[in-house]
Every structure is written in C-alpha cells, then in structure tokens.
Image (cartoon, rainbow, N blue to C red):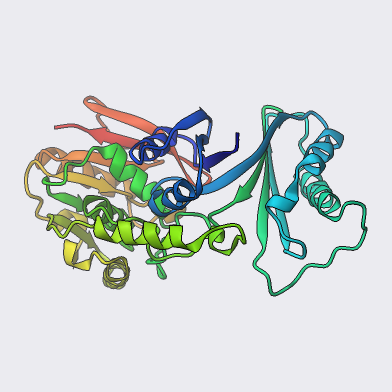
Length: 364
C-alpha cells in the first residue's frame, strides 16, 4: 500500500494528525515529525491545500530498514520509478539522516540519484534531463535506520502561503504561527491581541483559521506538474475551499511600535484576504488598551529578534499587562526571565527555526 507522509517540526505532530482527521483521512502510522496516511488524488490535493502546520506532503514509495549505503542504493534502484518519473525529467534528490548508522547525506543524495537513473534507464548509461520540464524531488529520509523514500508533492514548504512578501527580522514561519493559534485554544468570539505583531503573521493565521480560509489557496504545488495527476481534482478542491470561507467578523487587534512594520502587516493581511478582519495600529505594548478577559498570542523579541533596549523591562510590562487585564493566552520566547512568577503558568517546548523556545500559557 502506498502512503502519503506529512512532515512537520517537532512538537506539532498532534496538530498535523488532527487536521488530517478533520478531513476524514485515515492515518496509517505516526512517529516523530511525521504522520502517514492512505492516499488517492483528492486526498493528495486536499492535504496540500488545507495543511496549516505541516511542512510538506510526500508520496511514500518505499519504507524499509537500511544500515549501509550499499543497501540504500539497492533499495532505491529496485523501485519502479517509471510510474512516477517520465524519462528526461530533471531529478532532485535531498536527504536527511537521524539516529542511524548511515550519516553522510551527500553520499545518500548522489547514490540515490544514480540508483534512480539506473532504474529508469534499464542499463543504458546515457541520461539527459529536459531543462524545460518541471523537476521532481525525491527525499531520502533515514530515521532510526528506517529509510523512507519519498516524492515531494508540495514543492516549496507549505508555510509559504504566498501572502507574506515582506517581513521583519527573523519572523515566525506561517506554519508555526498557525500552530501557536491552534495550541492556544483561542475561542473565536473572544477578542484576540498581538501587541508586538511585527509583520502580522500570528494574527493573519488566526483570521484565516477563524474564517476557514484554506492556507494553500494562493500558491502552486509540485503535484500540478506530475504527468499522472488529473488537474480536475485540483480545480474541484480549490472550488470547495472557496465555498467554505466564512464571511464573519471578529475582534482581532494587532499593534507594533514600528510604523513601517504596521504598514507591512496591513499589506500582508490584504494579500491574505483578511485585512477587513484585523485592526492594526502603531503603538508600544504598554499603551495598548486591552478588553479585559481577552486572549493574547505574541512573539516578543528574543534570540535573533533582540532589541537594544532593556528586554527584562519589556517582559515585565508584558506580564503586568497580562495579569492586570486578566488575559488568557500564550507567549513564545527563549528568555529565562519570563514569566517571573511561574505559578499558574504552563509551557510547551517548541522549535522556532534552530532555536529552542517555550510557549508559555497563562489561563484565566
């Protein structure tokens, strides 16, 4: 049986499984940073268009234990690649290895591509790629000596929605921002704030979730170029997604002390189709007039996003605002001095790029 595999960052696997299950997709197995599920063309299409937190969607053409480069080559060569890759198609092979005997990814990539070409050419040594054809990417994922041979159906990572053409320094990926909203438990009728909104990613993702806007409506996917894919499936799925959008209003507020970033946030929200759903304004966090008992999700400066000013004072003001306005919600950060009083706070460990962070929750 052929599976799809959805990959993700560590810590959001439950969200990936949840968004697949909401589409009535049967999950066949799950492990760190991935979930596998049964597939057909419509499942492939919907999974890509609706995935808010997954990294990419792959076709899994093989899954087998491998403990040497020779074994890897033999496994890849044994696959009938002719059903997936037409002759002359440019082939890109990427590889990742973790907790496995085989550790040299450049060798995995070079041997993997050689094995695919040998399988396709059936002994003919000549291989010429058509530079005008769209490439197909094969991903060799080796985890705990188990090799997953995968075909990338998404193309660019799914966090690239298409609406964010401008951003500030070290912004959150759209998929992580969506994960923060989903983890936070925001109820759509409750006012939502991000008092350090930057380019607006958290609030834009929140508005798209609330209005049921599919994150993949404005982008292309690699499956559109597969010769065996039927385009009417994509057209049908896009039509379905547009019909499911809610035309409702919400109390979503964003602010930033940088007027330039507020302008970028507005432009990004406009491209995402939610500018009429979010109220942006310029202003320091301390000047925000919160509606009591509201919800907050924010990504303050830390790590690569450090400000020159006193960060401890910034975080102290943030904590005071949360407590004095009886706000519920979450703050993602890597600093050690927030919150000062950890009573009544809980945390979830997440990765923001290569940086280990804590997503702190304060309940009402």
